[in-house]
Length: 303
Image (cartoon, rainbow, N blue to C red; front, side):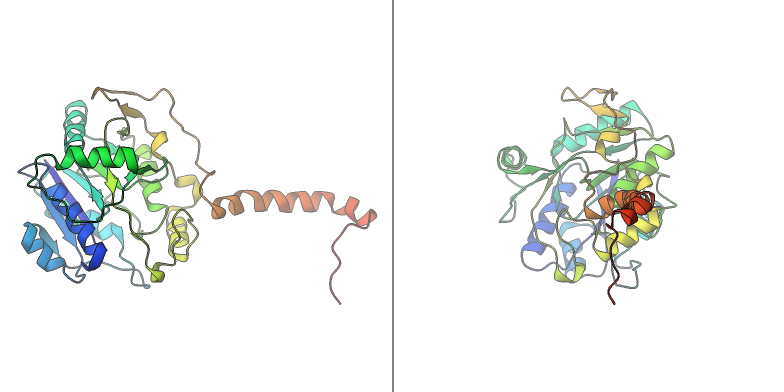
């Protein structure tokens, strides 16, 4: 079966509510689900006791204080009794479609990576998981009123034991590590399944803290750039449409005929544009310098 693992913010206010919702939604997927919550954030110990989760208070951090993922991925695989693992951000609601996708993937191959595009959804109150209709109501809300992010937003990773044990010290809550996860699986010849036609993962909308210096959709905050450096640059990122296979609406897994295999440089925001076009611009300036000098078009230095 599956061991879910994640880390959270402090369990206060709206953040605390949506995190409880997410953790509880994973817990009710199956009687044998295991959930590990990493970190000593305010309220984490109490929530684990309340929901019957495994609390691992220790995490490793960047010098900025931001949590690093590599320790969590290695530690979860060290202590879990299950052969499959799911890392998900601690705001994401999962439903039975996710469990059915897991069963289809497990029956198809022993090792795989399953991902899916997310449906950002407004959730303003705790979910009543004793209501047998909670999942169908949530799915309708997500699809009718939520926003499906594109293939670059990846917040749920389901994989078999042994993958990602040599992860760099990438920082959660910032960009590029998620795209590297797909690149890494492909590099190791692990089939990547795009579950988007079948699964509706529903992140509950929230803001970013001022301390993170993040703006939603802009991947050039300082910690994201550290992640980019640690993965080896833009050549080592892929997105969901780079998947080798697709899980269709029928529940059948088939080869992706429209697979995107080239390095992903576009749509990664200002940093990608800068990285790609700055060398080209310098080349053009150098090549045209003699002509611009003759025509008097060269920039003049201030005196």
